[in-house]
Amino acid sequence: MDGEKTAAGKLPEAELAVMLAVWRCAPPVTTARVMLLTEPERGWKTSTVISFLDRLKNRGFLSAEKQGREYVWQPLVSREEYVGTMTRAFFEKVHGGSVESLMGALFPAGLSPTDADALLRWLDAQG
Image 1 (cartoon, one colour):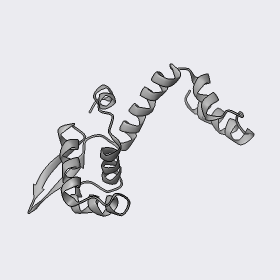
Image 2 (cartoon, one colour):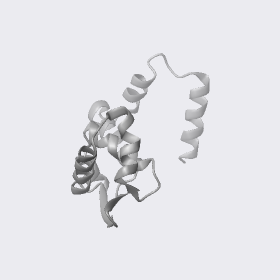
Image 3 (cartoon, rainbow, N blue to C red):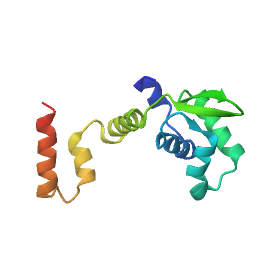
Image 4 (cartoon, helix red, strand yellow):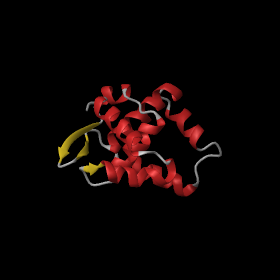
């Protein structure tokens, strides 16, 4: 899925919780596995999880294949791809693409020497 389509597909909180469960597993993942990963904190019924999985399939985040009596789900968008797209959209929308604005919000008291060194090493590695 390309970044533009992913950006237009910002996930609501409940669907994001399901995708986070899917991303924690080696694909493909069963509905039962998603239930095990979401049930303790959410208390969802199986039908609720299936509804979210179907929505995610319809939105292009997952594919589904019938194996025996159940479906297995395969992510079509990686966690890294989704997080990167959402982070870039937030950066542009909230900070107007300003690195200074972002850094000021993240580190209002300034960077520690350790963080500054890590940032400089990262910048150097970028070329």
